[in-house]
Image 1: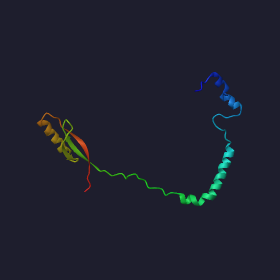
Image 2: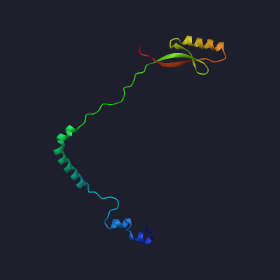
Image 3: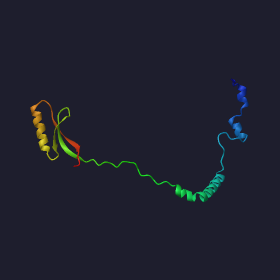
Length: 126
C-alpha cells in the first residue's frame, strides 16, 4: 500500500499549471467551423447512399392505443335519506313534492331526521 505524502502532492502539477503549459484539463476546445464543415460533408455523402434506403426504412405510424371514452349517461333523482345517510326512497326529479312529503311523514313517525337530496345515477341502455 502506497502512503501519500506531501512530496507526492508537490510532484503533481496544479490545474492552473496545466493550463499555462497548454494542456487542457476537462475537455478539448472545439473549432465550430471545422466541425460544421465535417458534418456538412458527412450529410452530403450520406444523402447519396441513403436516399433510397431512407424512404424504404420509414416505419408506418402506429395507431394510438388509447381507449375511446365510454359515454356514461346520468339521470337526476330525488332521494330520501335517514340520519345515517342510507337511502330510504327514490323519486323522479319531477316528483320533488312527493319526496319531501315522504321525508316529512318519516320525521313525524320516529326520532330520526330524514332529508331530501339530489342523486345522480347511471342510465342503463336498453
